[in-house]
View 1 (tube, rainbow, N blue to C red):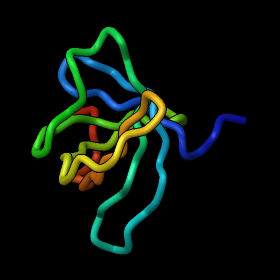
View 2: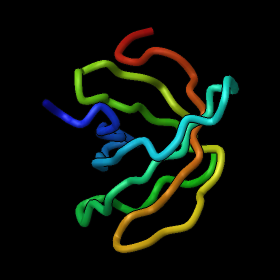
View 3: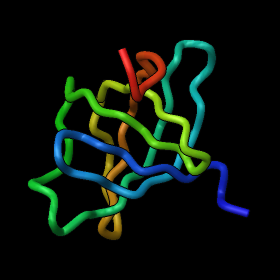
Length: 88
């Protein structure tokens, strides 16, 4: 069974594997850790918008609120859930 915290984050043409680190109350915010993608142009910046594709195929639109600390080839972010993805 896949890890329910696992997802792939899509920002523009770049995709990053990641996992949910924490849900932050009922404000629609989550902390995530993205793994480095050597083919990507760099990490998403604050205010970037993208989409999370969850392990089960569900997709959610997100915005980067804050770029947090990085470690071991990964980077932590605080994201705001903006709505369902994969459509209008």
